[in-house]
Image (cartoon, rainbow, N blue to C red):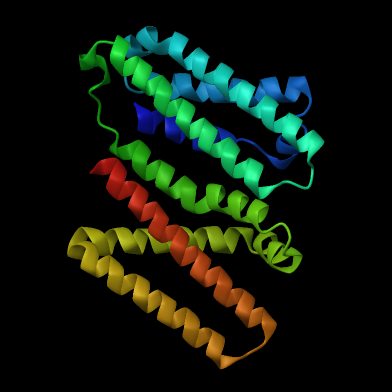
Length: 234
């Protein structure tokens, strides 16, 4: 169940949280809308498992939604007091959300009949991996490099091409992993880094070094997505 709720979190906190919502979450009505989307997705993913599981866990899903609301309220207060703090509060905020999902699932597993939660999670793991290498990585990178305005503009300007490239890289790595195991993945990563370094040597212009950074970052994101799949389906 953990992987289902984590997938719902990724979907609600990234592609289903557009810029206008993220910028206006200090308003109570917008924050309530945001956490309401989380609650709706929690219900939908649990309902995709079974109606019986939803009936047994809806109160826990409500608790998880309330905890999300509290965490975002705290983050809003930090942002008001220390607007120059960006990367740290973002990482702590996300870590707190993951921790609350883990704790709520632990509560569910200790209280709900085990036959209801003995479920296959493959499809949500794969779906979440693609969310991680696309929207999650895009938003996270954009926030964490806020001080580097030139690279940040590059991220925004190449939003769709880079998301497509990371999805393709993840697909290639999955094929290598399925057919050759870890050796195939390692070989693929090395070749991709070599190609990126060769591209940078062709020209020393700053834009090419930005491209090199983007390629290395995207390869790393794809490798992270594959790691998520290996752990989630292992």
